[in-house]
Image (cartoon, rainbow over all chains, first blue to last red; front, side):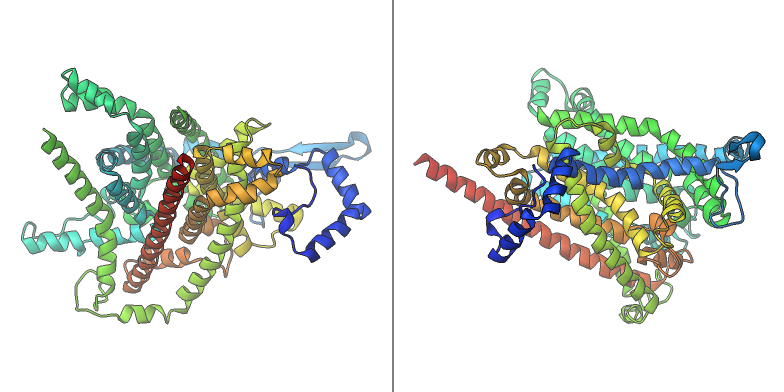
Amino acid sequence: MSARAEGPRGQRHSAGAQLVLRVLQQLPPYRWTQARLVKWGVTGRSAVIAIPYFWLLLFFLIPFLIVLKIAFAQQLNDSPPYSALFELIDGGRSQGWILDAKLYLRGFISLFTEDLYWQAYVNSVKISFISTICCLLVGYPIAYAIARSTTTWRNILLMMVILPFWTSFLLRVYAWIGILKNNGLINNFLMWTGLIDEPIVMLQTDFAIYVGIVYSYLPFMILPLYSNLEKMDLTLLEAAADLGCKPIKAFLKVTLPLSLPGVIAGSMLVFIPVIGEFVIPELLGPSDTLMIGKQLWRVFFTGRDWPMAAAVAVALLLFLVVPIVLLQRAQGAELKGAHR
Amino acid sequence: MNNRITAFRLSALIFGFAFLYIPILSLIFYSFNKSRLVTVWGGFSTEWYGKLFQNEQILNAAWLSLKIAAINATGAMILGTLAGMALARFGKFKGRTLFSAMTTAPLVMPEVITGLSLLMMFVAMEQILHWPQGRGVTTVTIAHMTLTMAYVTVIVQSRLSTLDDSLEEAAMDLGARPAKTFFLITLPIIAPALISGWLLAFTISLDDLVIASFVSGPGSSTLPMVIFSKVRLGVSPDINALASIMVLLVTVGVVIAGFLMARQEKRKVRDMQMAAASGGN
């Protein structure tokens, strides 16, 4: 597309607008700008790519580089509360200009030497791993049941899975406080039936964290699984049955392996964000839960230690590279499958 | 054998949806509870709704969040559509791999990392460019746009990749410029995807606590930040009332949107049938 300012609905411009446009197009600056833009290779196509590209570079990629930079800085009692890495010093006539670089490794060394941090990492991975498995165990039957329903039901059920996702995440986590606490819904019910005399302590335990995570992230597991299972060729199962395969065995030998890309995509969609989860352990877990998201929050907001928080973030990011690559591959496989 | 499978599917659905919906229903139920203790029933009452509408702090925060969410959703829709177009229609271009990675990574990136990195970016920008001055509505909006444009991109891209591009090619063959083709052909077809993208961007922004906490400044507390500071201290009945109102609004919105889309889909099917019938004659 050329850089001419022809409106999207060319002919439908009002007469006045057309006149203004005509006049503008005759003016030298317009032609000059147009010629320049074309010469620099600015076309509609490149603008469509460049605008979001530039935005993401500026607000997504470069910020990570800045985090990396600040991770090597020194904490200062200043605004901003970190030191500059490079300084240009005038060394006078004998030495000339000196580029003085100081990299403080304190943050990264603390990650390894202070138990607090690596325990938080290990614990985050553990909680994330277990809750991903739980999500899979809860989500797979639901996704399977939806995918094998009639078309009308399928759409209704799918909407019902998505609907809670549209209501506030924070309020849905909050709802579990009322359910799990000592005089909450579950304990009240169990004591009313006489099954227990003393309330079971559930809030502020690891159990509450798992329930909260599985509950909040279930749609992320169900949706990719569903879209995979829905695409499956059901004649394969018929063929298996014809060849004398029992349904359970057919499920294990045919359905499950075929749904593997969906399983990976769903698992990664749960596993990756849960590692850095802050809200759920903060509201439902014990006050001393060690999770890396909570740790980062505390170091940043309570300790006001920007370099340490940045180091924690860098380490977490490095850790997430492998699962993110796995996710991209699984999604690529799904897209290719869709085109076939 | 078949009965057993059906029974299994049915119980999976019943238990699954009970798990998804009981917490929300319990929130609504207890919002009508007279007792301050939330989960101890003390009779029916709507007093917490009245109290909610007198709470200046919550009302101000809600208004601020709605404003941010609306601006964010519009910006994210535009950026996400451009990115989705580039990925679905432009084939290979320089830096495509990085571009597609950057559009999917925000979806799964833990919010604490996104929030922290954007805050450090804003601080560095303020030092060098003297913009943005301090942190507040602008920074929260930019941060939310970066996050939510990724969702719009995915929606638009997947809609475009299932869409046959022969209509667009026909328009171009007939001499329409690419921009004209986009506004007259592509845009009307992908409009439902754009609307769901806008709504998704809107709700994500309205709901975000972590990123907003990092990049907002004094005096610009969003609704989730106010809710969080209250909820941290335990359950409180006016939050239940607030939650019920939000659930009601969302349900009405989603049902209306679903209804409109279903109607449009039906009309499309009917049009296609009529076109096929007249073509056959």
